[in-house]
Length: 195
Image 1: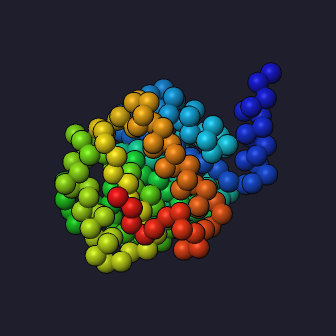
Image 2: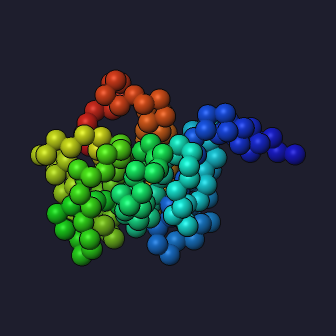
């Protein structure tokens, strides 16, 4: 019997925090498996797929890729009075606040939880010149709890390139630790804007 999944399950129940992952559109779950396995080892929590977009009653954090990030944030806004979402990480996804891309915008002011946005410098699906605009809005309007990293790579390299995977899983693990212990504003580990 493999005891590691059972121990992770017990830790989740004791700490009553669930970690959910929303995949990008039309991306098979198996694509994310190496990345999620590496992340689970760092955060010591099992990661559940969040593809039916039903928000759990327990405290939870959502990690999402691409359009999974947009959908997750929209779902939060529709249900924010009845959810225990503590924070979210969106990888190669964005708010599109000033309509830089041809789909609906999300107002960062309405999203009152910590959000870590991880962008890629050579993203072919979400060009940096469009996605970085959300950082500019966040900075110019002094919107709290919005954090940004820009890594080298493409739309998918965070999930397949070993160096990128190590960087991104570390960024996410640190963010989860800060959210879990509610240390935003109390810790020097995160500044309001990180590039």
